[in-house]
Image (cartoon, rainbow, N blue to C red; front, side):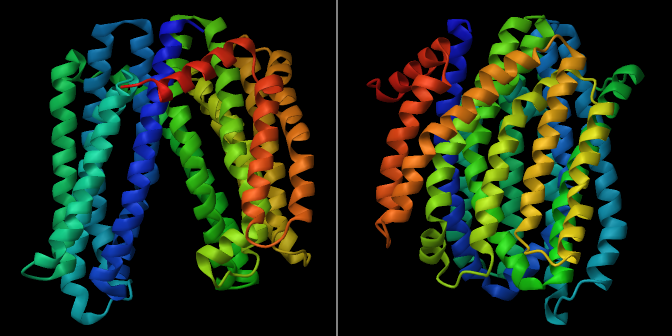
Length: 506
């Protein structure tokens, strides 16, 4: 990898990690205080109302993926006139989608809130106000997507991180303002959340229009470009819908066969993995623009190195965090929850293993998005992911333990990873042999060499201090395994540069 590009990735990775730590800590605190201030009933109303709008969030995720891809692609080609048109076209598309969401929300959604939700009669007035401000907040977030995508495509991660810090800080201020509200606290909270969205959107717009000439929006319509954008969006949407349907379908199966207690166990497992995946997600976000730009510019040699490095390092980052949790999940859950739901321990272990497989798929998925030929790819991957549901039904119907549905998920995720590798081979000159040698074999060797001693220590040591002992032993063995077996010479240089960034005096 070139030194300039590598330095940019390293710097962006460090910035995104700092951002994540701050936002996670503040979010945990504000959630607790908001729950206490609003009370269980009002907090429940806010979440159930927000949940209706969140049903549209997968549309927003697909739009973000599509917009980032097209903007980064044009930057890779260095076609700045096309970049201006692409931004304006994407903004026009987002405005039209925002209007569609408003229409659906004010008709079908409003009817659902007032006729189907189980909301106490004395809180229906407040619930309707919350619903209106929630629609406003979501619409603002949709309009923010092209600006957010432009910042990430231009790799301005410092601004992205600062603005995220400002956003959670404003939400922290909301917590303290709630006690001074002169009227209904629930309505006041909804208004303040909408105000934060307005501030963030205006900040993004101001920064982007000043920094990037391409972000000065003017109404522009190109039917051919719109078809490409809409096609990419539609097939990305299929992938998001299949993922949500598969995992929610499995939850429904668990609920039908066993009951709500098993859903609580799955909820705990999902929270644990969401926290772990957040660490790796920031790392992959830093690499994504470079992957898209490298393909667009035709630098396939650099692209291959990016795929190998991102895949391996993503796995190692998650593995370092995940293995000690797998060893000590019983103690961790007992300290955190006190009353641990049945099957939560087993679910956590298997879903973390599944995440370790899925994290390898991230760079492959980014590369296929960069290529842009995603129709057949999304159909095939969606079908594979949906297999989780009928297999989960079969496992539970035959009377197997519920944890076996996650064993099935591990199998399905492995199958999806294999399918992604084959798609890349078909779409461009991707060497499957090199990927297996440089990624799969190295990853497996690191796991094989680092786990036995830690597993032995885990069985010998008991009580709460087992966490400290097994973690220290694991970090020593995995650190050596990654450095001497897992990384290539160029990747070792990246690692040294990353550490020098941390210890360099300011």
